Image (cartoon, rainbow, N blue to C red; front, side, top):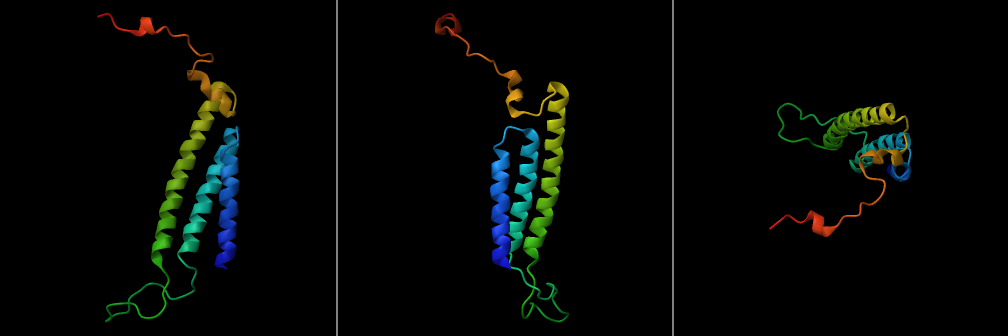
Amino acid sequence: MEQVLAIVSGAMLAASFYLLMRRSLLRFVIGLILLSNGVNLLIFTMGRLTRAEPPVIPKGQKVIEGAYANPLPQALILTAIVISFGLLAFTLVLVYRHFASGQSIEADDIQASEPREPLDVDDSARRLPA
């Protein structure tokens, strides 16, 4: 089962990298969603899949005996889900604001603050007087 999840996680990461390199901002957002889900699945797979007992120490003992489920990957995944949801909400707001101001969701249209043509700058004009 771990091999299947590793292959699925790799496919999700490959698809997310492909979508992140597209020009459309909507595809970029979908790639970001796939990236966060692929990484969460990878963390879950690395934590070893077991159907063992929950990690609860019985009364009167100092350590857990026998096989138990590792709680660390589950805690990391819950934290990553919250962080990725916040990042997704922020990204969607940025895409919406760009669409509202520029009427486009193409990444090439974001260059409004950059000059379209290279400036011819004379070095003598930039020097400060002595």
